[in-house]
Amino acid sequence: MEESGELAQAIGKFRGLSGEQQRLEEEEAMQLVARELVDVAQTAVTMMFVLEEQHGIDLDVILKEHIEKLRQKGYCD
Image (tube, rainbow, N blue to C red; front, side):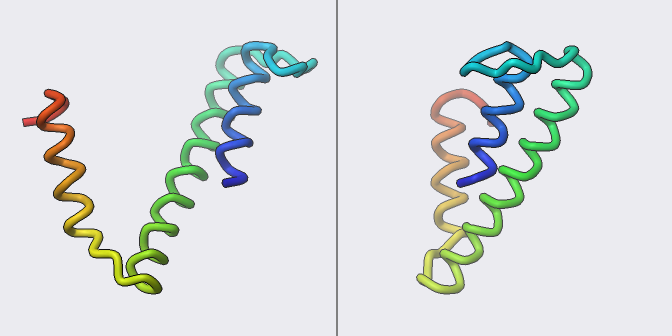
């Protein structure tokens, strides 16, 4: 997923990782990271609906399983 790479790049710019020359100020970097996270989330949601429509995946079942996993780990009640 292209957006994941862009997110990693945004984080790298802030931390000066992966050969990134440009080092951003924290506020600017966090804005960039937030924008890339929204891109990743939007792409993931779109992909879930494609799986549902084109491959018959039942998202209700998947989401219920995910919520149960979160409960078991103590992340929600």
